[in-house]
Image 1 (tube, helix red, strand yellow):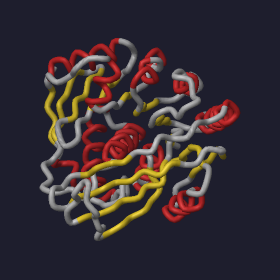
Image 2 (image 1 turned 45 degrees about the vertical axis):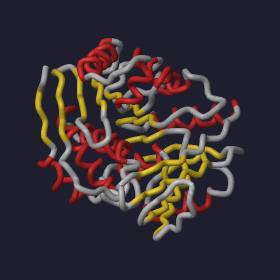
Image 3 (image 1 turned 180 degrees about the vertical axis):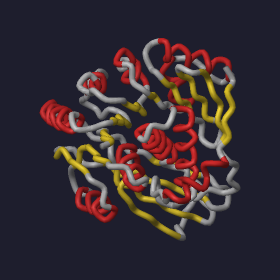
Image 4 (image 1 turned 60 degrees about the horizontal axis):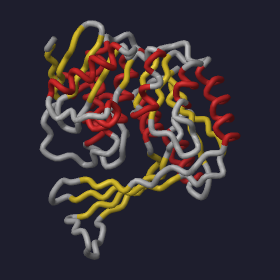
Length: 308
């Protein structure tokens, strides 16, 4: 079983416009609503990729019924920790003319010490039955920066971390199998510009030396870089003329990597599969709603070259 765990789910509203003009009255030509946030996107993607999956997160407030109902309709196995905090709502604005996506992100509500303790207990219980664990998303207000480190110390199986900043750095001594920040997140984590590829590679090598067995860095539609025990690789996704909604593609990437690793695929090839999943996600209005047959079809279009 793959456990996907995180503390910042969201109810997502997606507004589609022929042309969006800031500062003006804009009338949407389409609206979509779904359960989302990084942990939910990962859990949904894993389930649709036909992995035995369990999702663990927190939930509270008025969005609870809609959010849980959406996951129930998809058949995603899940466990919620109830909180007094309102589950956040995030908004995606899609401009069909320009192809731009704008994300309006509401911060997650603060969790109490008791709520964090109950999440910790639930995580320990679920992780004990897992063969692979993904920790993803940011920490809400009220959580100490070492909370992910506390969780990871209780895991006895391979892990993938899609987190950033001090929270990520504090986990490296636990030797996670994969860490997956994007380029911007990695720059913020190491506290310096990574505009040049050589700077990026040095930062990846540093995190590898500090404990991450594999470092995977994405950058939207651009190349994905991989550094690990058998070398450094650059992978190129296929060029897609127009995406439907790129939001959530990074979560599909994480899920695809984990799905392939759990099936015994070597890490660089697992990243190839993850990229195919990310492309498939970007072609759908709803994030991480994957068709495994389409992902398999896209896999040969992802190229990989060893650079070191």
